[in-house]
Length: 359
Length: 279
Image 1 (spheres, each protein chain N blue to C red):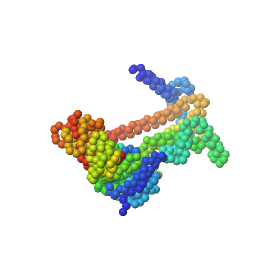
Image 2: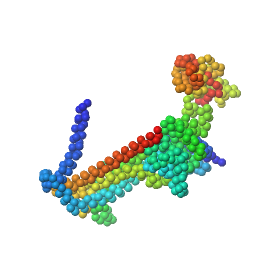
Image 3: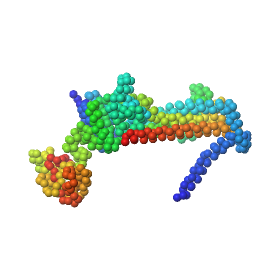
Image 4: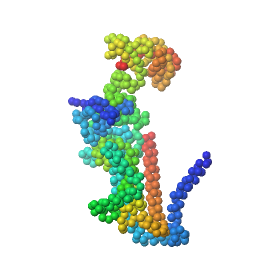
């Protein structure tokens, strides 16, 4: 059985500009799938092609095995939640939610029931007779969700669903969204530029850049095992160094890192000795200590530190002048932090914590 | 620092005087008992009485209103469609030419529009025998052609402001394009359509130039009547007639203003309510 949503070699150009280049993805039924990337990476264009507002220049889109080419937006089993919510300003909340239902073979009573059900789902029953400008931003977002879900689509597209909300509301809404998705089991395709949002919401993420998919995987895979420098730097903070492979043995790889002025060992990766690679280190994978620990360690001076309460961020200058970011969790209460400004410290990391990337 | 406001206020005073002193003097002299328009002979309302017993004036007023109603309505329908086409269909053949043609009458001298309408009607009468006579139909048609432009401009501006996504959302929810037009686009731009209609109505109601080219025997609109009467000398009943028109237009503006203020106040109260609901 084919996947629920299949995107096969889809490209889209606007004149000479190629917004989406040869993208192939498959999404399983009931999954929350995110398209993550910066502005202009083609994620929104891809979403609009799924909704039917744009036709692919090349490639095919299949939903449950059915080719969507030439199927207009109003005939697709797909609904979209717009970034601006796009609520109809002249209609009440009720009428907004019920709008799509007039195309369904339902009796008036059934339609009313469905609207009531949706209002209940997003907890907006007391707001039913208000107009969109009479409710708050968070409530508008929920009306938009209810409206998109009212016709029970097979696939729901969400364009930056949380971007218009403030930070506090966003966290709350995020979990609400996941809960609703779990309850009704609709497949979600979410477009977002916010990596945190993508990480918490999604089952799987496709990281996009310049119209191409860079990596597809679970949040953990993408964070811990990025396949290239773009993905590594786009998701989370990271410090990268140029390096050269000096030896490869079963299980380990030895790299010479000019910025460290020494060699380090990492897990084995598919690079031959002499290959130019990038060594990437996440701040929380680095351990700061006053004395030299065994294994990979490099010495530096604390240049800057920021205390966040639960943890601290250190910026450490190495002898070569390179700057490294490191996170330290403040485990004990009231105890002085591991290091202070201008302290000489050792940065160490486990061979398995280092990310080795080509180029 | 003090000089600038004084200067500005003086200029403002001159500006207002420039606009309103003529109108004010006209209003005052409409209550003049004297037959001579420029000599004050005491207060009287007799010109108003004579105005309403003047069959010619009443007929001209009725004709003007009829023409204004019909032309404004048709111009609004055509102008709205043209506005939607220009904003929403960005890629049709000859779009630039079409948009130029639609807005050209805005800058075209009225005399040119009038003369060309007249020549067109004459040629048409020659070829197909219609319109056999100029009058209500020809005036109305000419009014539609030039007032439509104003409706198009207003509707276009409103559409450019509105969020395209709400139309896409309706389409996404299963509506075909014509249904989207009816359910979403038209209601959303209805204030613009209404103000377009009002503008077309007023333009038609007070037009002299184009009307005088396209009118025929027996079809005298109110502005034409005033124009022809003034040629024989300004009489106080013209003052009375003009005062009534000012009164009607003024009332319209005031009522529209109050309605808009009310709507604004309601909207703001609603928004406060929404924020309270959020907090």
